[in-house]
Each structure stands twice: as structure tokens, then as C-alpha cells.
Image (cartoon, rainbow, N blue to C red; front, side, top):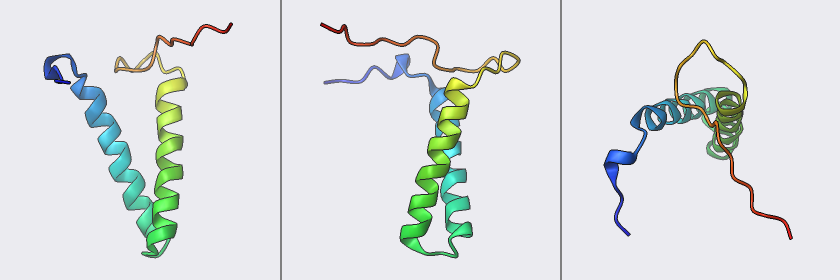
Length: 75
């Protein structure tokens, strides 16, 4: 399956990459360089940043956020 890179929202990818970097950096610093603790903290911090970015309403920032959701039809 080929990826059409012209349809990728690169701004959104960059924002998520920055969130992952900050989460990893803070996770490593807070856990005093413990690898497992740092990875766990980084995952928690990234999840928190992702939820705030995608689900907290911030109309003054005109950046890509999740605005349309599709749910499977229940039967």
C-alpha cells in the first residue's frame, strides 16, 4: 500500500512529534534516568498532551485538531 505524502497533515505530525519529544525529555528527567520509569512517565505525559490538544476546545488557535469522528454502527 503506497502512502500519498501530499495528503499528510505535516503540521499535525510536527506538533505530535514535539509532544513526544517533550514527554520523553520530562519522563527521563523526572524518573532520574530510570529507563522503565521514564518510559512510563513519557507515555502518560504524551497521552495527557494528546488528549488536551485533541479534545480541549481552543478556538483561538487555528491548528489541526480532531473535529470529525466516525463510530462503527451498532447493531
